[in-house]
Amino acid sequence: MRMPRTAAGSAADHEASGADRPGGGRPAPDATQADLPRTGPASDAPDAGAPAGDEAAPGGWRARARRWPARLPVLARQHWLATVLLAAGLALRLLAQFSFGPALIYIDSVKYLYGAWPASDPLGYDVPLKLILAVGNLSAVEAVQHVLMLATAVTLYLLLVRRGVPRWLAALAMGPILLDAYQLQMESTIMPDVWFEAIIVAGVAILLWRPRITARTCLLAGAVLGLAATVRQVGEILIAPALLFVVAGALLARQGGWRQALRKSVALAAAFAVPILAYSAGSYFVTGHFWLSRNGYEATYGRMAGLADCATLKLPSYARPLCPTPREQAKGPDDLDHQVTSPLRTYEPPAGVTVSRGTIIANFNHAVLVQQPLRVVSKISSDAAKLFSVTRQTDPGDTPISRWQFQGSYPIYLPTVFLNPQGTITFALKLGPADGATIYRKLDVAYGGNSRVWKPGASFLRRYQLYGGYTPGPLLLLCLLAGLAGALTVFRRRASEAQRQLALGATLFVATAVAVLLMSDLFEFSWRYQLPALVTLPPAGAFGIAVMLRYARRRKSDHLGAGARPDRRVAARAG
Image (cartoon, rainbow, N blue to C red):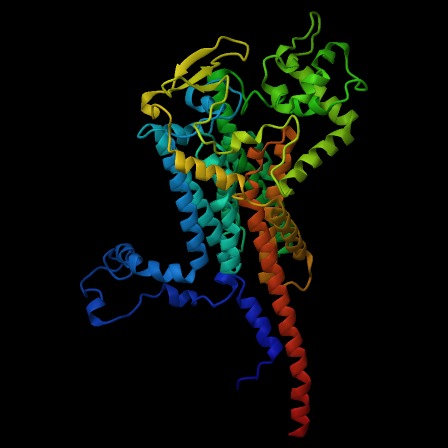
């Protein structure tokens, strides 16, 4: 005999069944039914003599591939907002591709093209770059980077919908990646940043793809996230949010307790270390140094020296020359790190000092951090807050924002990248020490030849970027706050499994954003280093908003159920 279901019970069942429902709306087909072969007319039935699993059978991959063109219009209608945004993003990328040729080249691009300033940064970007250049030129590299970020946006959308975020909200979350002109400009530049963003999304997507975290998932995600450090050294921090997520998933989502949390954390950390150790071992074989780059102890000098109050800073006399003058401090961390006249580049320990140069620099940075922590925290906090400002502002000493903006002509960066009268791109290369000889070299013809600019396209992209074609800071702040609010709901005792899974998604994206952005600001503020916010904060906000929407629906269902129960009791007495 079937028992009558109460409204509250029905609502609770509906809430639980929506944990992994695409879009949080219509129910997904039953898994067992979805895996069964579809039956159809006799003309579509497989031949009786065909072997089971034949690739030409209705369930085979070739048959499914042939059905895709017919399904595309249906999918486009179901995901219409995502389709519109993808089309707009594709149009912008095609415009950028044809407006500048062969691609945009920045100062640091020569590290990857010609090995300038050896060991100053990890060279993981060299692998995809050289593979593409083996069959194409720099325009091909740019095209691949555009496709990579379109795929990254689609990955985020599929991940969010899979985890129960409504389709409209998931589509809006990928909008910043697709439409932000600063993102677009970086994709057009021969730089590793877009690969760094894609690796972040890939690692996070692996962790979140299934509700239950397994040791195998941790191994795969750890290895992928570890690759990020070989592309940009700041990727070393990604182990922190990943471990936080694994522990939270094991404990708060009741997936095995402390023992499983420890087992999965060890698997994650070990896999994360593999790419880093492999790269460092290769570096030792080539250069004799077991490192990702030689900037390990030097990278924070510019930041610490730029904000230090050297008049009150206590230092050994042999380290005092590392203190910059007020005029040098005004030039900002970037100049203090890279200019050949900077104290960092001119300093040599006095005769008789047994402490190594690297140790002296590291001790200087530590002294500023320990003796003047308020100055450090105040400066980093004020720089971090710029991300949420209404306009893209910069302060004196910041890296010029113009470096990350489209120009009406092909951009040059003196004295490293410039054009001769014929438009040939020429480089001033330092293939040895920073104070060594300069070698002048033209861009290889095989890489794309002379610079080319399509003026109408370049002018449109510049106007678009300067007059609103970027993600507003207040919107990113809203995403951060929504993500934090959603993450905190993971501690609610009465949270449903669906709410807890959404909250864990918000936790991972918020923690990743905070870790990567703050670590970048620790070295210096640059709008280039704020781009990872576009692949972390909007998804965090989408997860957070989805948690609150689900919570509001559940409260409404509970309220309606509570109001229906007295009516039933009255009806029962009347009967």
